[in-house]
Image (cartoon, rainbow, N blue to C red; front, side, top):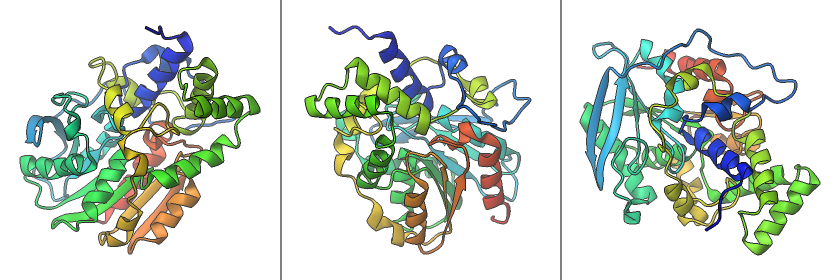
Length: 342
């Protein structure tokens, strides 16, 4: 049995935190912001908002944990947020909770993630089945009309769902979405080619040997995720919500569907391609990504161009996890998008 080095633990901890675990305050405290950064933050957050409603929602394969905040009798439609991963949890989406002052905000954990049931049946780990959970949430909360937002892998599911043109979907928000593995890896290679030479060499050697546990590769991988996944310490709101329960992130699920690194795919999503779905989305769509996002600005801009009614916005200074790196800008973009909508 191989024992994890300190660098291994730090790398995996950082990945889990950014994917939605938020249970590692010691790591967050030691993570320095990039030199020259001047992040603006939502201040005054001292506690995680308590859910107004919590439910266990039946779905194919088990039950999902779901929570909702916001007015139940207002005139604004609910918005459902899909977390990233695969294997993350709703805690990665808590940056959306301030929107609950004007409309219902619904967060949930996908099957085998977070507080949801964990049957561990790999037959459940498909794009089709995870996408079907959205209708389970709609039924549980009685959502005849609603808005939908997905981040990263959650953006994959949101795009899949919207492309089916479901009745009652009013608008779509894709935050740093995984649209195709091909484009994701092409973007990653652009960034890898910009890494220090020793990191490029370590990545090339790991690819040659298949040894992604080597210390040199792990150091390179950690450098990459700090530059492109999340560039900042945990925001006050994420810090307030972290630590409710350990092991919310499902690493087995991440490894089975994706792989050992953000830019090394050995799992079932290796040949995933949703680019053909882009022209099928009829509802107004907002695409958002960070300046240093794993999904590069030029790629997301092109995706928006291929959709019938889409707008792209780039968030300066942010990595992939926009709601943590730039919470003020994230909140304003979503508020502005939803302001004139039902």
